[in-house]
Length: 199
Image (cartoon, rainbow, N blue to C red; front, side, top):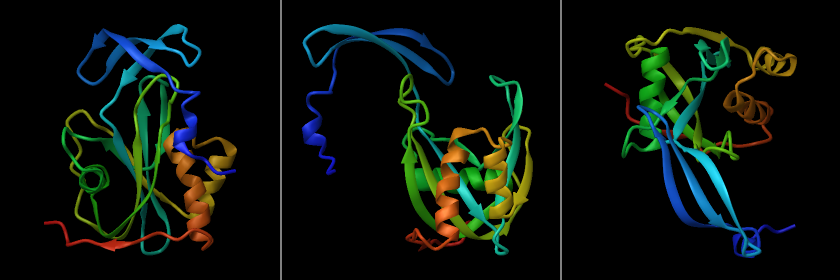
């Protein structure tokens, strides 16, 4: 089956009006009135999000750099790959480099883009850009004020087992597991790009 975006016209909705419901420090919630493909109308409430990056960071011995961080909405400590939101006008790779250093203390000599995911397509426009990083050098973490996390490492086998047994519940981290499995098996290739060392 060939997927052609031009053939999706019979599925598309068209925005007629927008109402702002909430504008917070981080999240922006809107309600839109849309025209449906059959000419009817409906409302859609969703969260506008600036976008984010996440990083599959590989140590020289093959282990992955992971984080354990408390996430208040879930009331749980989650195991996650390093991640963070894009600043206004920031390119995803620059954001990935910044977040990896700030949260884990590592800089990387090589980077490869893997994929973009939409973790909650029913109620947010958030896109997360997933990068792989290798050739890591530890420089020391630079956590934001009020940010608390543990940096841990796991072999690919340990990481995949944690995904299987439910210890990993974060969506971006679970989605990245597919790539970790296929990249480490040699089934999927990454286009690694060397980058100048960060100061």
